[in-house]
Image (tube, rainbow, N blue to C red; front, side, top):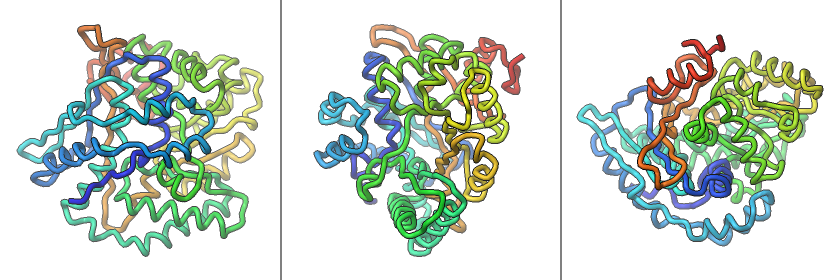
Amino acid sequence: MHQIITHFTDDDLYKLTMCCAVIDNYPRAQVKYAFTDRDSTPYPPGFADELRRQIELLEGVCVTDEEIAFMKRRCPYIPFWFYNFLKGYRFRREWVRVSQDAQGHLSVGFEGCWSDTILLEVKVLAIISELYYEMTGESRKLDLEAYYGKSWDKARRLIEAGCSFSDFGTRRRASFAAQDVVVRAMSECGGEISGPGRFVGTSNVYFAMKYDLVPVGTMAHEFVCAIAGMFGPQMANHLAMRAWSTTYRGALGTFLYDTYGWHIFSLNFSEDYANMFKGLRVDSGDNYEQLERIRRKYLSLGIDPATKQVVFSNALSTEEAVRLQNHAAGKCIPSFGIGTHFTNDFPGVKPRNIVIKLTDVKITESWDFYNSTCKLSEDKGKHTGNPATVRRFMEALNMDCAGDSV
């Protein structure tokens, strides 16, 4: 089996920006992560052994001068000291445990310093996804030549509909080659088709470098989840916004608000942060309901919501993005981050429904215990974490079993 990850920046930008913010604000924090396959997929015999080998191969993947030069040019908000950290960074197999039971179900976990292990998630998910198709033989269904045309046509429809959109598909891509085809097709379509919309870029830093695009992304739920584990969920959004603004001074100003639901976020979203952050990202719940909540909040603070960006990224398709664009235009500045629909939309191939989530945290290595944490989705049934932790957090936030405030 070929080595799947060969470039250090074959990763989503938000992992790098969060890593920088973690070092800046919580340099001694320790964490644990756990893998979940929401479909309880049985993986082929020997899958864990090959996954373990692929993770060991990451130890030889180092950042290059070319990658650093690109990020310095395209990501001016990242402080230069962070690149010295990246030059000395090396993956270590000891951070990762992998096993597989008799039925083929996969278990993957990370443990270590947060600033080290944070850079594993997207890479390992991309490895699992591609490796699954290789070992099951489904990779033979991936017609990349036809996929170029399909991807180009998606970009054309989005551009003509006025959508500003980005590729967010690294984590559950069918393969490295598939994502390469997608980014190339959409970049070339953007250069050929005139319309009110545009292909903004990709979350994958390597492909952004390859095609000289803008790397897109800010943060993930992980950042808020870890802070909630250390300090409690009630003020986690506030502490996350404060830490983020400390590191980036108003840059990278799109906040992912739904880690613990809209209600507690809205209580934390004061006028100063509403003005500082250029917008919010909708990643769960009903997109139309969430937009209306966002609009009402901005209006209550005396801010015109039409001046604020709203990034939609909740399991979008081309068709849904066009519908949202038509609905949201004039109400906000809509933008779309589209993942699996871009990078794993092949006939006869089922995308992996897999995640890796931060589950435990402690603020310093000197503590002899971890605090558990979780994520409370706006989508019913998608809370992630130990059930007892989920219940504890929901009680702390005065939420009922459906996630609504009571």
